[in-house]
Image 1 (spheres, rainbow, N blue to C red):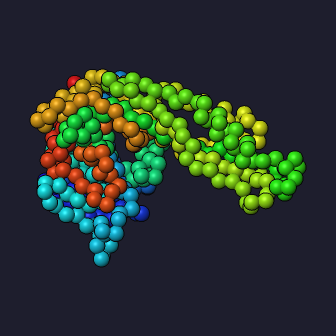
Image 2 (cartoon, helix red, strand yellow):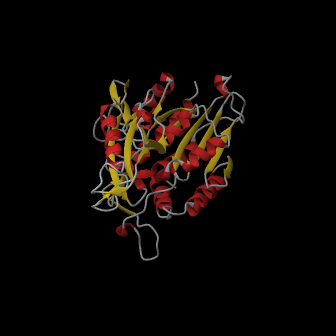
Image 3 (cartoon, rainbow, N blue to C red):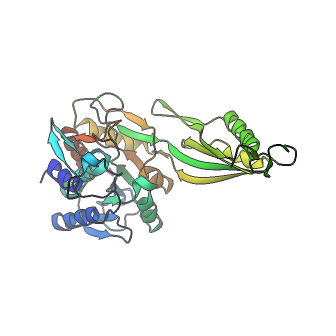
Length: 371
């Protein structure tokens, strides 16, 4: 079975509301095709291990490398589902079309094959090769967070999210950093009153407006990575308040979208110092930055040997499970087939040539790292 066939099979399995069937497929395939130690945990993550058990950070030759992906997807468009509820997968013009082809079952399939085929020894000096496919990435990294809480801690990881087409069209680059996302709510409270008696009430919208004014003065941090400036951002995206035209509002809520970068964050908590204002963090997806130049270079060399173009070290604008792993101490890079603009679309697709490229890069990396 080649990467196109395995991707087709995996993509055809619905996994936007329940990842069970996709997880069962991955687990069964790994048990059948490899001699790895395979388990599917209580939330549905599939984790397999080859080589020396108990990789130790104190012995460079005994370190662990993980090939990481996720098998959940966002809800498909009606055209991506057939009458039986199965996902439609079509092959044409050198690409596979269907929900999850790009994000990111194609990369999962490539990682499964590379995990099987990589020449990895079983002695104590060989280190450990790990495969992991998580659930719940699309809803805040549920699976990755659970695995980390249960002790999942590889020394290094290649995460198969999209990195194709960043430096130039058709080239699969190695991403060494990405932004995170912190979503928060500012709640302003006041005292309701009839609008004809302005002095009796306390206008929550005015208090929210003061908070918005403060947000607009805050500077989002930026960091230089791989010759690029990875810049954070801070923007108010929603506002809701008031109950009627003639009532002074007692409550107003403002939503803030913040893109974070490795290192400092905007001082957004300052809004809570304003009278009648509360600040609540609703979601906090961590950013990622690879701190091991040798590892990033090793993956780049493996990538360079699999394609005619010249891959580069790049950054990504959005959060992935690499953020959770990096936050827990794993050195991560991102290398995958998806191109900008492919994920989550009605015409989602992936290049078969690039899938083969990813398989070969994953295999070469597994065989040559650590070194």
